[in-house]
Image (cartoon, rainbow, N blue to C red; front, side):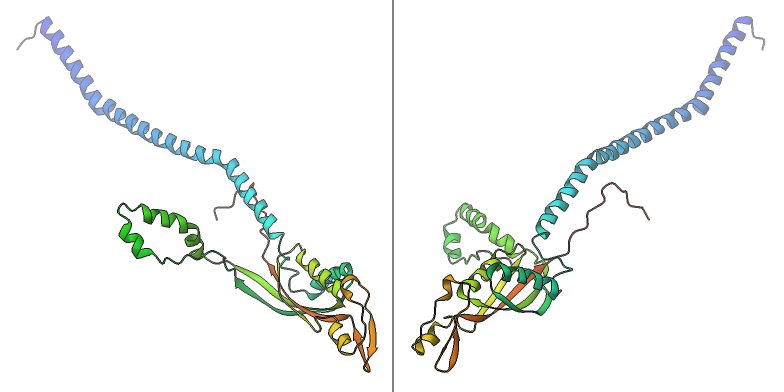
Length: 269
């Protein structure tokens, strides 16, 4: 069949359109799919980048928060006897001698009793619910139960809190002095700027010689206003207005927190 010029032109146009369509489906459409896939990947990458940037933006505040915790912890640990000193009788003796010098008492001996790790007890007001059944019967809308839970929330939370352990060391401190000196020494212990607890105070003569002097019909100056020890002889024995005192003290210690290095990024390994 012979094609005229017009038919040839139409056929050429159809062939060109066919080639274009084949090229579109064979080349352009797959590329379009790749572009769409890359756009989706780019969105995910940008989202991840935004999340990472948000975390990076938080770093300065995190640094400040970490250093604030360190500073607050350092203030607290400063109240405790350093862990390197708590079991050193020489160091503790130095503290106790300073108290003796200030109070005019005589420090006889500082003896290490024991050191151990002990859980810290929490002190809280324990609630005994004696009216649970009555309250339950009257609690039509649950408001009474909520009110009771709010009232006991703090003590309940404290009672369930995990107990932390602390190093505690007991020392037996022997001193000698007048009533004024002994009282002044105990006052210095109370003012000790480290965490401590006075467990017991045992005096050989809590009257500071007054009972013995009275029994011997002798006069002995009261030592409540004097640092000077006075000794008299009566009934063939010496009577003093000073006495020996044994004090049991518990000192507490914790490890100091190392200052965190917030500027160094740890290795992934």
